[in-house]
Image (cartoon, rainbow, N blue to C red; front, side, top):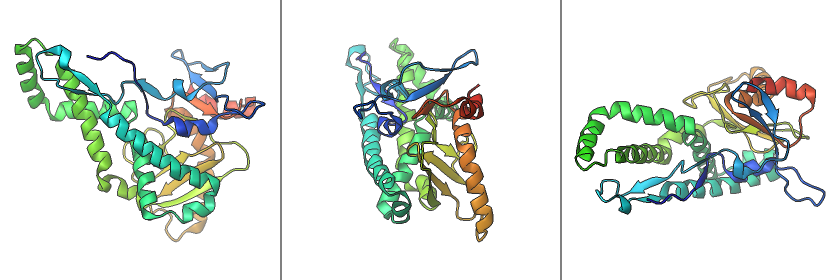
Length: 292
């Protein structure tokens, strides 16, 4: 079996790079990264961090071929799913860059196919996060307990029972991709009302969970809405059409309050916060306390 290290990003590097600071030569220099330590302390990593070392896990999306072979050497790892996600990321980042060029105009003129790409991408940020994958794995194991026990007994005959973990990972990732590719699962995101909030200066943080579902932390199903920072100045928001219907004042009040809450929610559900600048003490006190 191949032992090569493959770093799979669950938040694309192309999106994270929007938080890169520039040096005097206007070259990318990395971003500021505030990390939650296991003892509860929050610290600023002293040097600008890179996308390579953020929001990734080795072999997160790796699947395996020939796992039922009794000859262990023929097992092969595959990047099939990772390649499909990379293609989705690439297509979505094209659309995101268009929005960043002209946010308010572009968001009003998204074509159906463009919105489908972005909705599928947004859902993928949720599905492929390690926590979501682990939750899905437990559900698969629970629902298929009898079948897995049958497979385990047969694998034990050939002294390859440890291959069951590879089988379960394949099943879990395949289920994720099937759900992600089913339009029914992202159409409700497409059908939300989309808007952008734009700041003149850098304000929005990112993190290992930049996607905020239902406007609260660690939600499971994106039923009511979502928010995703596309850059330090642009926040993309989707809201279920029935929320605040025909009530413009409540809608505007909700948006203004939520924008102020967004950074705090990202910090609450992430292990670290990513910023395009070193935060001053007042801002750090407001948002980074959520990392503790």
